[in-house]
Amino acid sequence: MVRVAGRGAAVDLTSWLLRRTPVRPLIAAMPGGTWARVAVEQFVRQNGWRLALSPAEANVLVVAGPTTAEISPYVDQVWSSIPAPRVRVHVMDGTDAERALSSVASTLHDVELQRGEAQLALRKEGLPQSRHDQHSSAHSCGAAMHDDHASEMSCGGAMADEHGGHEDHGEHEEHGGHQHGGREEHGGSHQHGGHHGHDMSSMELPGGLSMADRGADRDGLTLDQLHVPLGPVLPDWPEGLVVHTVLQGDVIQQAHVEVIGASPAAHDRLPLVARRLDSAARLLSVAGWADAAAQARVLRDEALTERSNANDLNRWARRVRRSRLLRWSLRGIGGALPRLHHWLDDIVAGRDTAGEPAAHELAALLTGAEFAAARLIVASVDPATHEVTHHA
Image (tube, one colour):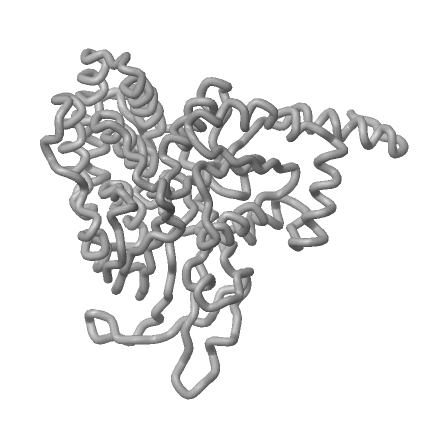
């Protein structure tokens, strides 16, 4: 039993709790921030931290790469969705990570600083006072953005609840409890539309969501049409990418893609093998196989420092290719499985055997797909965002 008497004891209890608060960073990767993101992931792994999957479970926001006036509002919206205690840091490039992140833990555990930050956030941002309140509001983090353009491209900060661990087991030493849509929930959806003849678009549902429009689906039925954007700030998501979707039921009827926040420094490509390992890690992470994704990132980092071991690469590639559960999970998901296998071929061969992912095909792949598969499809294409312009 903890006995608290007086303000001093309350401060001591707060300090005790803060010192035991684990660091949970959420990475907001910017266009041109690939090397910065990779350096942050390396630092996180080396320090035993665990990445957050949504603003609701994060206490550190790491902005990786250069920001622009176009994308900054979305980053700010994600920041406002992170409950106190919290820390925000900016890693400009791959050489800046250690300097920017070395003091994160001490800042997070500073009682007076965090108390002041919490009070300031409550006054300026209307931040929920508890993580329970935040959990319910994180799924509409874009709703606070009132201008038309911003509300159509909400920040995408919240994600679905984290998967259960996918540990090796059974006949093929793979992950279990795999789900297609376990992490497919969009973040920051802001839905809008209206019924003809009635000003329904101004009405809001709980959580700040607008009323849906209506339209005929492929079977001739009249169903609600919801305008749901994905991105530009999501974990395991191409930097700066925004996918605008029109949903009827759980099917994407229309999709178009664009990139916001691109800067002149946005062409920071990784070498081929490291790039393919990075893409594979994203897809495996979204698919829920955290162990294989983590190993892919270790191999990526070794490839970047020219310490790759061919036997390790081959062993990892065989393990991924032989996963029957992964094949079952990705089969029929917008060509995700063949693209993954092409990446594995490139990794083993050390050369480009498949060509670059076809970014211009992303909208076509998404149209007609179930919404639960959208993030898997995007991760399987993993387009170089400087190549994406606007495709409907």
